Image (cartoon, rainbow over all chains, first blue to last red; front, side, top):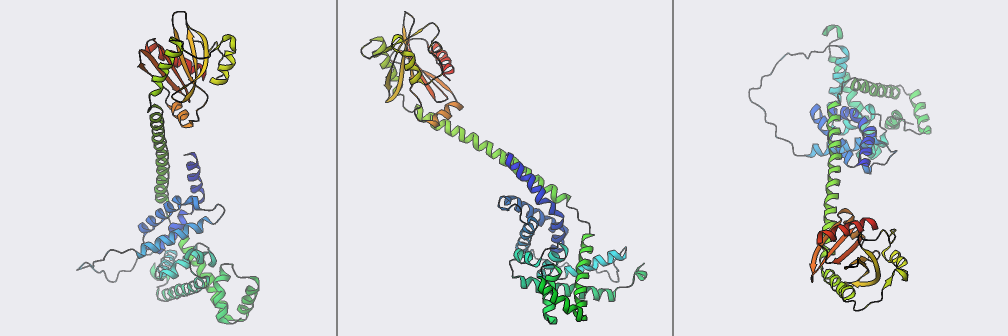
Length: 178
Length: 251
């Protein structure tokens, strides 16, 4: 029991410190706050159960992200609930989203552009640009060749850039929204 | 380096994985090619923008951390409980199996009683070691106890003699005590009979039990792997006190 206690303390120090990073990526991957929380909880609990297999001194963050990505992949391949469209849904027209500041506008645009990416492109962009993983690390995590990671990364960046440029050309200026 | 090559290696450049030679080639190319230079700068800016936008987003991990920690600590408690339960069950099984094995055959009580009748009451046979005949050395060697002969005395009785014997095919040391009126026999299991399991079981659960055999009371005591049997006409309760005290003295 004592060794179990030491193990849990070590897990807290080595693995739990990455909870926020995992949540950030999971939220963008699932597009849902609650689904992200569930995925990260499951990731950490899976990691805890196999923590004895984790080699000390290796990259724990990469290990956790690999678990998260595998989990998200499994969740995506699970049979999903059938979505039934409700009749007579009220549609509000001419409603402009309220944005408090230019920073919010930019952030929401970036998030929208990232979330519009296909899953393959989205995950590599988040892991590289947000979490700072190398292409090699991402290729190990995803189990794909490094060349695939590089091309997905290039395409993902290009798509986001295009989306942001399109947005910035159609958005009213800061003065106009105030 | 041509533009398509430059574009291909840009992800490695941005993640710092490009080797020095290719990096030099890319830098030479972007110095000369405005389109690739702009593309590289845009990608750098995009990564920085993504990072800034997402890192400034508030992420509350309190709930997840609390949930995971409670699961982990619950897991630890469950494991502790499982270990405790498993140990208790294992100990109970060990005791049951060992004691069941040890007591499955009660031939030794009959044989001890018969031996006492033949050797002590009727004095039919046997070569005894007496106090004069190096009894102390004999007892120390065979009984393997740190206690001296004086400590092995039973209150109100004197150790008269001793010898080796076999009860139910097992070697015992037979010690005879007397007080002028009657003699009683104590059989001490000689040495360790290689029953480590029995030693563990009787350490966990020392036992003293009595029974009547052919008009004599036989009381057996097991503690920490040591076993003694007392055969006499004394009441069973008195025998049990003697056996308990003797086991304590010997251990």
